[in-house]
Image 1 (cartoon, rainbow, N blue to C red):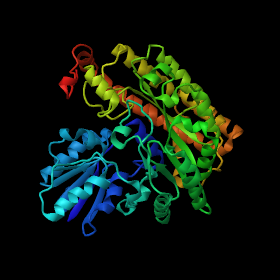
Image 2 (cartoon, rainbow, N blue to C red):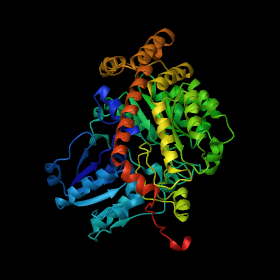
Image 3 (tube, helix red, strand yellow):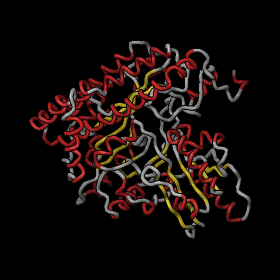
Image 4 (tube, rainbow, N blue to C red):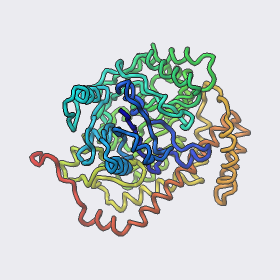
Length: 521
């Protein structure tokens, strides 16, 4: 049996870092960890091939070779998923689909033969058992149970060329203890963090190391610190021990802002090599935080918390949202001022969206405020809800935030603010040839650009004089700014093309998605 595993394309988004990766001749940050994880669960006698269409073209020869096509994706990959599925069906192939996108929206993919929903460690064996026994496989395999992470296999890195990526991936835990109403993590993976063993984590790191990888590794957990006790007593000390004598390795992850309350946790994370953490800050408006159930961010000085994380040697990347019911027109300037003061350079600001299956989705569906499924792109200026605030005011205010924050006038001073506060324990690692080449590209694209050049060279000179060890980071963040501005320009160009049509349908008679359960109204 020949199994073709396909990973669809990501659109040009904030988190794609597509235009930043061009500086180091890469096309995508992370490999398809979901497909790599389920690969060991497939029968050993099957022949497997993985095509990441973000790097390689899916050819007709690939499809002719395959007996079955297995596809996994997230919401933002929806459009390319439909194209891949249709193309596979045109070759008469059996299509099997799984992952977050299909778990919440499988009814929209009519050409798929079989859906492996929820967590593949539980549902894929059910499909395989039916297939092996000669029973006609069902169209949908799903479960209300959660997988035992101790039984999750080591992802199969042999499926990819690791050096085609900027960053490898590991998943230590699934689930989050918090109750944010707009987040679909708990809807998919539950509230109780489920953890891999320390031995599993080290085995996955060792696999990458033996393959020659010594660069960035992303712990893709939605909240890495869900079990702080186990991290401090077991996992982090083991990673610190494992890294001794090894060059390189910087770790990135996602966590809640309450990590700032635990100096020992941050110290161990920094010693282990964690240099970046994504935090859901969401908004400086406390009423909106309470509205969405973001209680871990309430009654705290968020700027102070961010500074503590920076001072511990971990750079904060953050997500922000406007369009909550409690937001007023003042939120736009408040958001700009907060982000500028915080020194968060990688600041993703999006309009509030309601993912399917979330508490927010169900509430707004009951209120008749769901327009359609969300795009999955948190920073394209779109929303799938009818906001309380006037939609034109909200959209214009959102664009003001984006145009201001990513402009050289605001971005470069924010980089300085971060560099002043950021105190890494570990000294910078090896500098690679493609990174040196990237610096010369910044001179051409930013340093010689009218209107930006003076900010760029001011940062270069200031960094060399005040914190030369952080020079590479300063240049990296300026490259991020280039990417953010380019994505913003592309998004605004798309908006202009459809402004008249979309504004008429959005403001006058929006097509409201009807509640699935009419009796709930």
